Amino acid sequence: MGNRTIEGYIDLLYESPDGLVLVDWKTDRLGSNSDQVEITAKYARQLGAYADVLKQALGRSVVRAVLVFLSDDGGAKEIDVPIPRAEPVGVG
Image 1 (tube, rainbow, N blue to C red):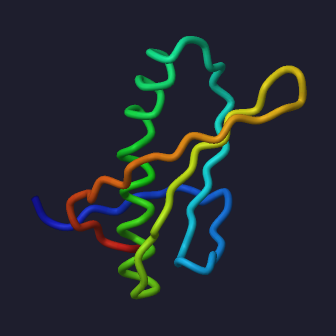
Image 2 (tube, one colour; image 1 turned 180 degrees about the horizontal axis):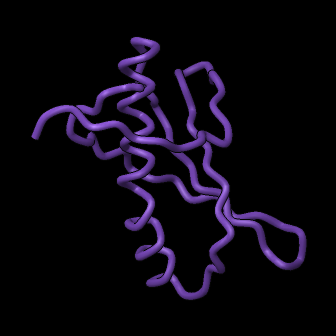
């Protein structure tokens, strides 16, 4: 497949005692549990690509990826996302 370039913005990356944590805020509205599963699957590949690029750039793995959905009442819901490993990507 050759090298690919991706472009994106990581909303938040921080270091916990266990390692790097990747956080991505989303504006989708969450409904039923099936909606949550579908939305999580929709963004899992994106977070996996970010994790792969961070591994290449920093030489360290992301140990946790989290989607944060804001609600109309001012609250937020966090959903942990299993980090799939994307195909190798070129940085740049």
